[in-house]
Length: 501
Image 1 (cartoon, rainbow, N blue to C red):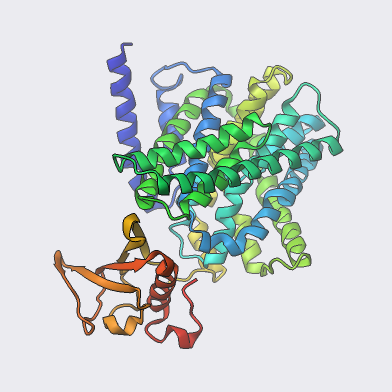
Image 2 (cartoon, rainbow, N blue to C red):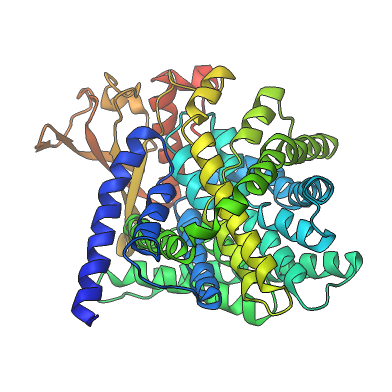
Protein backbone atom coordinates (compact mmCIF):
# COMPACT_ATOMS: atom_id res chain seq x y z
CA UNK A 1 0.00 0.00 0.00
CA UNK A 2 1.10 3.56 -0.70
CA UNK A 3 1.79 6.25 1.87
CA UNK A 4 -1.53 7.97 1.19
CA UNK A 5 -3.43 4.77 1.94
CA UNK A 6 -1.54 4.32 5.23
CA UNK A 7 -2.25 7.94 6.18
CA UNK A 8 -5.93 7.50 5.39
CA UNK A 9 -6.10 4.28 7.40
CA UNK A 10 -4.24 5.79 10.35
CA UNK A 11 -6.36 8.95 10.36
CA UNK A 12 -9.54 6.87 10.13
CA UNK A 13 -8.50 4.74 13.11
CA UNK A 14 -7.64 7.82 15.19
CA UNK A 15 -10.97 9.50 14.38
CA UNK A 16 -12.89 6.31 15.14
CA UNK A 17 -10.97 5.97 18.41
CA UNK A 18 -11.79 9.55 19.39
CA UNK A 19 -15.49 8.90 18.76
CA UNK A 20 -15.20 5.68 20.75
CA UNK A 21 -13.85 7.59 23.76
CA UNK A 22 -17.29 9.15 24.15
CA UNK A 23 -18.89 5.70 24.22
CA UNK A 24 -16.33 4.49 26.75
CA UNK A 25 -16.89 7.58 28.91
CA UNK A 26 -20.64 6.98 29.12
CA UNK A 27 -20.39 3.24 29.74
CA UNK A 28 -17.55 3.44 32.27
CA UNK A 29 -15.38 1.10 30.19
CA UNK A 30 -11.70 1.96 29.95
CA UNK A 31 -11.17 3.05 26.36
CA UNK A 32 -8.26 0.62 26.01
CA UNK A 33 -10.69 -2.21 25.29
CA UNK A 34 -12.12 -0.39 22.27
CA UNK A 35 -8.66 0.52 21.00
CA UNK A 36 -7.53 -3.10 21.36
CA UNK A 37 -10.62 -4.08 19.40
CA UNK A 38 -9.57 -1.77 16.55
CA UNK A 39 -6.16 -3.45 16.54
CA UNK A 40 -7.72 -6.91 16.35
CA UNK A 41 -10.01 -5.68 13.57
CA UNK A 42 -7.19 -4.49 11.32
CA UNK A 43 -4.87 -7.37 12.32
CA UNK A 44 -4.38 -10.80 10.85
CA UNK A 45 -7.88 -12.03 11.74
CA UNK A 46 -9.58 -8.88 10.41
CA UNK A 47 -8.27 -6.84 7.51
CA UNK A 48 -5.20 -9.06 7.40
CA UNK A 49 -2.47 -6.56 8.23
CA UNK A 50 0.48 -8.57 9.54
CA UNK A 51 2.50 -7.35 12.55
CA UNK A 52 4.66 -9.95 14.28
CA UNK A 53 7.63 -8.05 15.63
CA UNK A 54 7.73 -8.24 19.45
CA UNK A 55 11.06 -6.36 19.60
CA UNK A 56 9.61 -3.35 17.77
CA UNK A 57 6.39 -3.61 19.78
CA UNK A 58 8.42 -3.55 22.99
CA UNK A 59 10.38 -0.44 21.98
CA UNK A 60 7.31 1.46 20.78
CA UNK A 61 5.35 0.31 23.82
CA UNK A 62 7.94 1.53 26.33
CA UNK A 63 8.10 4.96 24.65
CA UNK A 64 4.29 5.20 24.63
CA UNK A 65 4.17 4.28 28.33
CA UNK A 66 6.76 6.98 29.03
CA UNK A 67 4.53 9.56 27.29
CA UNK A 68 1.50 8.39 29.29
CA UNK A 69 3.47 8.65 32.54
CA UNK A 70 4.67 12.14 31.59
CA UNK A 71 1.07 13.22 31.03
CA UNK A 72 0.07 11.66 34.32
CA UNK A 73 2.76 13.60 36.16
CA UNK A 74 2.01 16.91 34.42
CA UNK A 75 -1.73 16.72 35.11
CA UNK A 76 -1.47 15.54 38.71
CA UNK A 77 -1.97 18.25 41.32
CA UNK A 78 0.68 17.92 44.02
CA UNK A 79 -1.64 19.07 46.80
CA UNK A 80 -3.95 16.14 45.99
CA UNK A 81 -1.27 13.45 46.14
CA UNK A 82 1.39 14.70 48.55
CA UNK A 83 -0.31 13.09 51.55
CA UNK A 84 -0.66 9.83 49.60
CA UNK A 85 2.97 9.54 48.45
CA UNK A 86 4.26 7.49 51.44
CA UNK A 87 1.47 4.92 51.11
CA UNK A 88 1.82 4.86 47.32
CA UNK A 89 5.56 4.21 47.66
CA UNK A 90 4.88 1.24 49.93
CA UNK A 91 2.32 -0.11 47.45
CA UNK A 92 4.72 0.43 44.53
CA UNK A 93 7.59 -1.42 46.20
CA UNK A 94 6.56 -3.84 48.94
CA UNK A 95 3.11 -4.26 47.40
CA UNK A 96 4.63 -5.14 44.02
CA UNK A 97 6.90 -7.74 45.62
CA UNK A 98 4.01 -9.33 47.52
CA UNK A 99 1.87 -9.38 44.37
CA UNK A 100 4.61 -11.10 42.34
CA UNK A 101 5.04 -13.86 44.93
CA UNK A 102 1.28 -14.21 45.53
CA UNK A 103 0.72 -14.85 41.82
CA UNK A 104 3.79 -16.99 41.20
CA UNK A 105 3.26 -19.59 43.96
CA UNK A 106 -0.39 -20.51 43.15
CA UNK A 107 0.29 -20.41 39.39
CA UNK A 108 3.21 -22.83 39.87
CA UNK A 109 1.16 -25.19 42.06
CA UNK A 110 -2.16 -25.02 40.15
CA UNK A 111 -1.12 -24.52 36.52
CA UNK A 112 2.18 -26.39 36.74
CA UNK A 113 4.34 -23.54 35.39
CA UNK A 114 8.04 -23.70 36.14
CA UNK A 115 9.17 -21.27 38.82
CA UNK A 116 10.87 -18.81 36.48
CA UNK A 117 7.84 -18.49 34.20
CA UNK A 118 5.51 -18.25 37.20
CA UNK A 119 7.50 -15.39 38.71
CA UNK A 120 7.78 -13.77 35.29
CA UNK A 121 3.98 -13.85 34.93
CA UNK A 122 3.62 -12.44 38.45
CA UNK A 123 6.00 -9.58 37.64
CA UNK A 124 4.20 -8.77 34.39
CA UNK A 125 0.86 -8.55 36.19
CA UNK A 126 2.14 -6.63 39.24
CA UNK A 127 1.80 -3.11 37.85
CA UNK A 128 -1.45 -1.18 37.70
CA UNK A 129 -1.94 0.79 34.50
CA UNK A 130 -1.63 4.58 34.68
CA UNK A 131 -3.80 5.23 31.61
CA UNK A 132 -6.61 2.98 32.83
CA UNK A 133 -6.49 4.39 36.37
CA UNK A 134 -6.40 8.02 35.24
CA UNK A 135 -9.24 7.59 32.70
CA UNK A 136 -11.58 5.80 35.11
CA UNK A 137 -10.81 7.18 38.56
CA UNK A 138 -10.65 10.87 37.62
CA UNK A 139 -14.36 10.60 36.78
CA UNK A 140 -15.23 9.08 40.18
CA UNK A 141 -16.13 11.37 43.11
CA UNK A 142 -13.68 9.70 45.49
CA UNK A 143 -12.11 11.25 48.59
CA UNK A 144 -9.01 13.11 47.44
CA UNK A 145 -6.69 11.03 49.65
CA UNK A 146 -7.90 7.71 48.22
CA UNK A 147 -7.81 8.96 44.64
CA UNK A 148 -4.33 10.33 45.31
CA UNK A 149 -3.09 6.93 46.50
CA UNK A 150 -4.35 5.22 43.35
CA UNK A 151 -2.96 7.89 41.01
CA UNK A 152 0.45 8.01 42.69
CA UNK A 153 0.68 4.21 42.88
CA UNK A 154 -0.07 3.82 39.18
CA UNK A 155 2.61 6.38 38.35
CA UNK A 156 5.24 4.88 40.64
CA UNK A 157 4.81 1.10 40.31
CA UNK A 158 5.74 0.85 36.62
CA UNK A 159 9.42 1.37 37.41
CA UNK A 160 10.01 -1.58 39.78
CA UNK A 161 7.89 -3.95 37.68
CA UNK A 162 9.79 -3.13 34.48
CA UNK A 163 13.06 -3.77 36.30
CA UNK A 164 11.75 -7.08 37.69
CA UNK A 165 10.56 -8.27 34.26
CA UNK A 166 13.90 -7.31 32.69
CA UNK A 167 15.83 -9.25 35.34
CA UNK A 168 13.61 -12.34 35.02
CA UNK A 169 13.88 -12.23 31.21
CA UNK A 170 17.69 -12.07 31.24
CA UNK A 171 19.78 -15.05 30.21
CA UNK A 172 21.12 -15.48 33.74
CA UNK A 173 18.85 -14.47 36.58
CA UNK A 174 20.73 -12.87 39.51
CA UNK A 175 20.34 -13.97 43.12
CA UNK A 176 17.60 -12.39 45.23
CA UNK A 177 20.05 -10.14 47.06
CA UNK A 178 21.67 -8.90 43.85
CA UNK A 179 18.25 -8.39 42.23
CA UNK A 180 17.01 -6.30 45.17
CA UNK A 181 20.19 -4.22 45.10
CA UNK A 182 19.81 -3.57 41.35
CA UNK A 183 16.15 -2.60 41.78
CA UNK A 184 16.95 -0.15 44.59
CA UNK A 185 19.93 1.31 42.70
CA UNK A 186 17.91 1.87 39.51
CA UNK A 187 15.07 3.49 41.44
CA UNK A 188 17.46 5.80 43.31
CA UNK A 189 19.25 6.84 40.12
CA UNK A 190 15.94 7.40 38.31
CA UNK A 191 14.53 9.49 41.14
CA UNK A 192 17.72 11.56 41.38
CA UNK A 193 17.78 12.31 37.65
CA UNK A 194 14.08 13.20 37.53
CA UNK A 195 14.28 15.48 40.55
CA UNK A 196 17.42 17.16 39.15
CA UNK A 197 16.14 17.80 35.62
CA UNK A 198 12.70 19.16 36.56
CA UNK A 199 13.66 22.19 38.72
CA UNK A 200 16.40 23.18 36.27
CA UNK A 201 13.99 22.87 33.35
CA UNK A 202 11.26 24.89 35.07
CA UNK A 203 13.78 27.61 36.02
CA UNK A 204 15.08 27.81 32.44
CA UNK A 205 11.56 28.10 31.01
CA UNK A 206 10.79 30.98 33.37
CA UNK A 207 13.93 32.82 32.34
CA UNK A 208 13.97 32.17 28.58
CA UNK A 209 11.40 34.09 26.52
CA UNK A 210 10.49 31.84 23.60
CA UNK A 211 9.15 33.64 20.51
CA UNK A 212 6.01 31.45 20.21
CA UNK A 213 3.83 30.25 23.11
CA UNK A 214 3.31 26.90 21.39
CA UNK A 215 6.98 26.06 21.94
CA UNK A 216 6.58 25.90 25.73
CA UNK A 217 4.52 22.66 25.80
CA UNK A 218 6.99 21.04 23.39
CA UNK A 219 9.89 22.13 25.59
CA UNK A 220 8.22 20.70 28.70
CA UNK A 221 7.68 17.30 27.09
CA UNK A 222 11.24 17.35 25.72
CA UNK A 223 12.61 18.05 29.20
CA UNK A 224 10.62 15.12 30.55
CA UNK A 225 12.28 12.87 27.99
CA UNK A 226 15.68 14.32 28.88
CA UNK A 227 15.03 12.88 32.34
CA UNK A 228 13.88 9.55 30.88
CA UNK A 229 16.83 9.12 28.51
CA UNK A 230 19.36 10.47 31.01
CA UNK A 231 18.27 8.05 33.71
CA UNK A 232 18.32 5.14 31.24
CA UNK A 233 21.86 5.99 30.12
CA UNK A 234 22.95 6.06 33.77
CA UNK A 235 21.36 2.61 34.28
CA UNK A 236 18.50 4.10 36.29
CA UNK A 237 14.75 3.83 35.97
CA UNK A 238 13.61 6.01 33.09
CA UNK A 239 9.95 5.54 34.03
CA UNK A 240 10.45 6.85 37.55
CA UNK A 241 12.58 9.73 36.24
CA UNK A 242 10.03 10.90 33.67
CA UNK A 243 7.10 10.64 36.09
CA UNK A 244 8.84 12.60 38.84
CA UNK A 245 10.19 15.19 36.39
CA UNK A 246 6.73 15.73 34.91
CA UNK A 247 5.13 15.86 38.37
CA UNK A 248 7.56 18.55 39.55
CA UNK A 249 7.29 20.63 36.35
CA UNK A 250 3.51 20.32 36.27
CA UNK A 251 3.33 21.86 39.75
CA UNK A 252 5.98 24.56 39.23
CA UNK A 253 5.51 28.18 38.19
CA UNK A 254 6.08 27.92 34.47
CA UNK A 255 4.90 29.98 31.52
CA UNK A 256 1.78 28.55 29.87
CA UNK A 257 1.49 25.69 32.33
CA UNK A 258 -2.15 25.06 31.42
CA UNK A 259 -1.40 24.77 27.70
CA UNK A 260 1.52 22.43 28.50
CA UNK A 261 -0.88 20.15 30.36
CA UNK A 262 -3.39 20.27 27.51
CA UNK A 263 -0.70 19.45 24.95
CA UNK A 264 0.52 16.53 27.08
CA UNK A 265 -3.02 15.17 27.36
CA UNK A 266 -3.43 15.25 23.58
CA UNK A 267 -0.10 13.55 22.95
CA UNK A 268 -0.88 10.93 25.62
CA UNK A 269 -4.23 10.13 24.02
CA UNK A 270 -2.49 9.68 20.67
CA UNK A 271 0.10 7.43 22.33
CA UNK A 272 -2.66 5.37 23.96
CA UNK A 273 -4.53 4.93 20.69
CA UNK A 274 -1.40 3.92 18.78
CA UNK A 275 -0.19 1.64 21.59
CA UNK A 276 -3.42 -0.30 22.05
CA UNK A 277 -4.06 -0.63 18.31
CA UNK A 278 -0.51 -1.93 17.84
CA UNK A 279 -0.90 -4.46 20.67
CA UNK A 280 -4.21 -5.60 19.19
CA UNK A 281 -2.48 -6.17 15.85
CA UNK A 282 0.32 -8.08 17.58
CA UNK A 283 -2.14 -10.52 19.16
CA UNK A 284 -3.23 -13.67 17.33
CA UNK A 285 -6.88 -14.47 18.11
CA UNK A 286 -6.48 -17.94 16.64
CA UNK A 287 -3.98 -18.78 19.43
CA UNK A 288 -6.06 -17.31 22.25
CA UNK A 289 -8.41 -20.26 23.03
CA UNK A 290 -5.62 -22.33 24.61
CA UNK A 291 -4.80 -19.41 26.92
CA UNK A 292 -8.35 -18.65 28.07
CA UNK A 293 -8.60 -21.12 30.99
CA UNK A 294 -5.05 -20.55 32.32
CA UNK A 295 -5.55 -16.81 31.87
CA UNK A 296 -8.84 -16.80 33.77
CA UNK A 297 -7.30 -18.82 36.59
CA UNK A 298 -4.22 -16.58 36.81
CA UNK A 299 -6.43 -13.49 36.64
CA UNK A 300 -8.65 -14.80 39.44
CA UNK A 301 -5.56 -15.40 41.56
CA UNK A 302 -4.41 -11.85 40.82
CA UNK A 303 -7.74 -10.18 41.62
CA UNK A 304 -8.91 -12.35 44.51
CA UNK A 305 -5.61 -13.18 46.22
CA UNK A 306 -2.54 -11.26 45.08
CA UNK A 307 -3.94 -7.72 44.88
CA UNK A 308 -5.86 -7.88 48.20
CA UNK A 309 -2.87 -9.48 49.94
CA UNK A 310 -0.51 -6.79 48.63
CA UNK A 311 -2.92 -4.09 49.87
CA UNK A 312 -3.26 -5.70 53.32
CA UNK A 313 0.50 -6.10 53.77
CA UNK A 314 1.20 -2.57 52.49
CA UNK A 315 -1.51 -1.08 54.72
CA UNK A 316 -0.10 -2.89 57.74
CA UNK A 317 3.41 -1.70 56.96
CA UNK A 318 2.18 1.88 56.41
CA UNK A 319 0.47 1.75 59.80
CA UNK A 320 3.58 0.38 61.51
CA UNK A 321 5.64 3.14 59.88
CA UNK A 322 2.99 5.65 61.01
CA UNK A 323 2.62 7.13 57.53
CA UNK A 324 -1.06 6.24 57.01
CA UNK A 325 -4.01 4.30 58.41
CA UNK A 326 -6.21 2.73 55.76
CA UNK A 327 -9.70 1.71 56.83
CA UNK A 328 -11.00 -1.66 55.69
CA UNK A 329 -13.36 0.03 53.19
CA UNK A 330 -10.43 1.85 51.61
CA UNK A 331 -8.39 -1.35 51.46
CA UNK A 332 -11.30 -3.17 49.81
CA UNK A 333 -11.67 -0.48 47.16
CA UNK A 334 -7.91 -0.33 46.52
CA UNK A 335 -7.99 -4.09 46.01
CA UNK A 336 -10.74 -3.90 43.40
CA UNK A 337 -9.38 -0.77 41.70
CA UNK A 338 -6.03 -2.28 40.70
CA UNK A 339 -6.77 -1.97 36.97
CA UNK A 340 -4.47 -3.62 34.46
CA UNK A 341 -4.17 -2.26 30.95
CA UNK A 342 -1.46 -1.68 28.39
CA UNK A 343 1.42 -1.99 30.88
CA UNK A 344 1.16 -5.78 31.42
CA UNK A 345 0.72 -6.40 27.68
CA UNK A 346 3.77 -4.27 26.86
CA UNK A 347 5.78 -5.99 29.60
CA UNK A 348 4.77 -9.36 28.12
CA UNK A 349 6.62 -8.42 24.91
CA UNK A 350 9.92 -8.21 26.86
CA UNK A 351 10.37 -11.99 27.40
CA UNK A 352 8.89 -12.61 23.94
CA UNK A 353 11.62 -10.46 22.39
CA UNK A 354 14.34 -11.95 24.62
CA UNK A 355 16.32 -14.89 23.25
CA UNK A 356 16.74 -16.40 26.72
CA UNK A 357 13.03 -17.26 27.05
CA UNK A 358 11.70 -20.04 24.76
CA UNK A 359 9.50 -18.51 22.06
CA UNK A 360 6.59 -20.85 22.75
CA UNK A 361 6.60 -20.05 26.47
CA UNK A 362 6.89 -16.32 25.91
CA UNK A 363 4.06 -16.26 23.34
CA UNK A 364 1.83 -18.28 25.67
CA UNK A 365 2.51 -15.82 28.51
CA UNK A 366 1.65 -12.95 26.16
CA UNK A 367 -1.65 -14.60 25.22
CA UNK A 368 -2.46 -15.25 28.88
CA UNK A 369 -1.81 -11.63 29.81
CA UNK A 370 -3.92 -10.44 26.87
CA UNK A 371 -6.86 -12.55 28.05
CA UNK A 372 -6.45 -11.38 31.65
CA UNK A 373 -6.39 -7.69 30.69
CA UNK A 374 -9.50 -7.91 28.49
CA UNK A 375 -11.63 -10.05 30.81
CA UNK A 376 -10.78 -8.44 34.13
CA UNK A 377 -10.77 -4.87 32.82
CA UNK A 378 -14.22 -5.56 31.41
CA UNK A 379 -15.23 -6.85 34.84
CA UNK A 380 -13.58 -4.25 37.07
CA UNK A 381 -13.79 -0.99 35.11
CA UNK A 382 -17.58 -0.57 34.81
CA UNK A 383 -18.19 -1.79 38.38
CA UNK A 384 -15.90 0.68 40.15
CA UNK A 385 -18.64 3.33 40.69
CA UNK A 386 -20.94 0.65 42.17
CA UNK A 387 -18.18 -0.69 44.45
CA UNK A 388 -17.30 2.83 45.63
CA UNK A 389 -20.95 3.51 46.40
CA UNK A 390 -21.36 0.12 48.11
CA UNK A 391 -18.38 0.86 50.34
CA UNK A 392 -19.72 4.39 51.02
CA UNK A 393 -16.63 6.05 49.60
CA UNK A 394 -18.28 8.39 47.11
CA UNK A 395 -18.42 12.13 47.79
CA UNK A 396 -21.28 13.18 45.54
CA UNK A 397 -22.39 16.00 47.85
CA UNK A 398 -19.03 17.76 47.80
CA UNK A 399 -18.16 20.42 45.27
CA UNK A 400 -15.51 19.47 42.76
CA UNK A 401 -12.25 21.37 42.96
CA UNK A 402 -12.00 24.60 41.04
CA UNK A 403 -10.12 24.59 37.77
CA UNK A 404 -7.39 27.20 38.07
CA UNK A 405 -5.19 28.19 35.12
CA UNK A 406 -2.45 30.78 35.21
CA UNK A 407 -0.63 32.89 32.66
CA UNK A 408 2.51 34.37 34.28
CA UNK A 409 3.02 38.13 33.90
CA UNK A 410 6.79 37.91 34.18
CA UNK A 411 7.65 41.58 33.93
CA UNK A 412 5.25 42.44 36.77
CA UNK A 413 6.17 39.36 38.82
CA UNK A 414 2.46 38.61 38.95
CA UNK A 415 -0.02 35.93 37.88
CA UNK A 416 -3.38 36.12 36.16
CA UNK A 417 -5.65 33.38 37.54
CA UNK A 418 -8.70 32.14 35.69
CA UNK A 419 -11.20 30.67 38.15
CA UNK A 420 -14.17 28.66 36.83
CA UNK A 421 -17.07 28.28 39.28
CA UNK A 422 -18.52 24.72 39.07
CA UNK A 423 -22.27 24.00 39.55
CA UNK A 424 -22.01 22.78 43.17
CA UNK A 425 -19.58 25.45 44.36
CA UNK A 426 -20.45 27.47 47.46
CA UNK A 427 -18.91 30.51 45.79
CA UNK A 428 -22.41 31.05 44.38
CA UNK A 429 -23.95 34.08 46.08
CA UNK A 430 -20.72 35.27 47.71
CA UNK A 431 -19.98 38.99 47.22
CA UNK A 432 -16.56 40.04 46.02
CA UNK A 433 -15.61 41.76 49.27
CA UNK A 434 -16.55 38.60 51.20
CA UNK A 435 -13.72 36.70 49.49
CA UNK A 436 -11.27 38.60 51.73
CA UNK A 437 -8.39 38.11 49.34
CA UNK A 438 -4.93 39.45 50.26
CA UNK A 439 -4.35 43.14 49.56
CA UNK A 440 -2.01 42.18 46.70
CA UNK A 441 -4.81 40.34 44.84
CA UNK A 442 -7.89 41.64 43.07
CA UNK A 443 -10.82 40.21 41.06
CA UNK A 444 -10.49 42.34 37.93
CA UNK A 445 -13.03 40.82 35.54
CA UNK A 446 -16.03 38.49 35.46
CA UNK A 447 -17.29 36.63 32.39
CA UNK A 448 -20.98 35.72 32.78
CA UNK A 449 -23.34 34.37 30.11
CA UNK A 450 -21.00 35.54 27.38
CA UNK A 451 -20.83 39.08 28.84
CA UNK A 452 -17.69 40.55 30.38
CA UNK A 453 -17.75 43.22 33.10
CA UNK A 454 -15.62 44.69 35.88
CA UNK A 455 -17.10 43.75 39.29
CA UNK A 456 -17.58 45.97 42.32
CA UNK A 457 -17.14 44.93 45.93
CA UNK A 458 -20.87 44.13 46.15
CA UNK A 459 -21.04 42.02 42.98
CA UNK A 460 -22.34 38.51 43.75
CA UNK A 461 -20.59 35.54 42.18
CA UNK A 462 -22.76 33.05 40.34
CA UNK A 463 -22.40 29.46 39.16
CA UNK A 464 -20.62 29.15 35.78
CA UNK A 465 -18.93 32.54 36.25
CA UNK A 466 -15.32 32.88 35.18
CA UNK A 467 -13.29 35.19 37.41
CA UNK A 468 -10.00 36.76 36.40
CA UNK A 469 -7.86 37.41 39.46
CA UNK A 470 -4.60 39.36 39.31
CA UNK A 471 -2.22 38.56 42.14
CA UNK A 472 1.44 38.96 42.95
CA UNK A 473 3.48 35.79 42.58
CA UNK A 474 4.08 35.72 46.34
CA UNK A 475 0.33 35.68 47.09
CA UNK A 476 -0.73 33.25 44.40
CA UNK A 477 -0.82 30.13 46.59
CA UNK A 478 -2.73 31.98 49.30
CA UNK A 479 -5.31 33.18 46.77
CA UNK A 480 -5.78 29.69 45.34
CA UNK A 481 -6.23 28.16 48.78
CA UNK A 482 -8.72 30.87 49.82
CA UNK A 483 -10.81 30.44 46.66
CA UNK A 484 -10.88 26.65 47.03
CA UNK A 485 -11.81 26.91 50.70
CA UNK A 486 -14.78 29.20 50.00
CA UNK A 487 -15.83 26.98 47.07
CA UNK A 488 -16.05 24.00 49.42
CA UNK A 489 -17.43 25.53 52.64
CA UNK A 490 -18.67 29.02 51.76
CA UNK A 491 -17.62 32.43 53.04
CA UNK A 492 -17.29 31.05 56.61
CA UNK A 493 -14.81 28.40 55.49
CA UNK A 494 -12.28 29.45 58.12
CA UNK A 495 -14.76 28.77 60.91
CA UNK A 496 -15.19 25.22 59.62
CA UNK A 497 -11.44 24.61 59.59
CA UNK A 498 -11.34 24.51 55.77
CA UNK A 499 -8.03 25.85 54.43
CA UNK A 500 -8.37 24.93 50.75
CA UNK A 501 -5.45 22.52 50.73
